[in-house]
Amino acid sequence: MHMISDDVVALDALAVRASVELVARARPADMARPTPCTDWTLHGLISHMTAQHYGFAAAAAGDGDLARWRPRRLSDPVADYRASADVVLAAFSADGVLDRQFPLPEFATGPLFPARQAVSFHFVDYVVHSWDVAKTLGLEADFTPQLLDAALRVARAVPGGKARLAPGAAFCPAVAWPDGSPLNQIVAVLGRSPGWTRPDLPAVTGRAG
Image: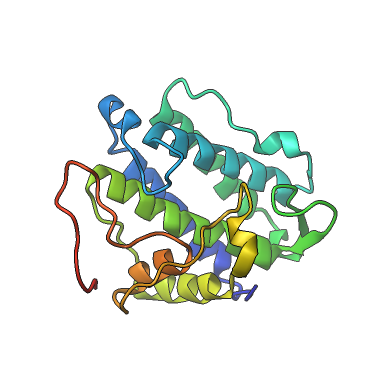
């Protein structure tokens, strides 16, 4: 996968903070809503996002225990999500983090990943998950052109093919979608339909962007 430059930690932090702001707008009644992630309600998506933050934070410290990636019970999804985001942001901002190798047992057993590559995985995931949450709540995910350009380069480098059909695959097969906004291109490349809308909201049709 394409390894973006030294600003990957800063870009990742922007994506994570955007996700925190979006999750903070969810209300208890929203937690049962469907999301663009077919298997998850909003509560399930936030649980997954929270677990991933803790998993990546552990990996940044060299801890490859798969248990660090397991979902936890959320007593307050919004507050618990914010706490997990604080943990991963602190882990990624530690001195010398970009010189490390990350064990990522959810991705592959055995090999270590260079820090920039590992953080780029997390970065693009939270751009997409911010979009997921925004769509679920009927909101917009707002990112800078620089961030979206970087995320699109990472997204286009994610391997396709049969691996995306495997159980537990991080992303579904790419969705055909007319060229539109960079964010729509990112989510389509990674298997989301940019036209997805909440069942109680009007559907999006035609060209996006």
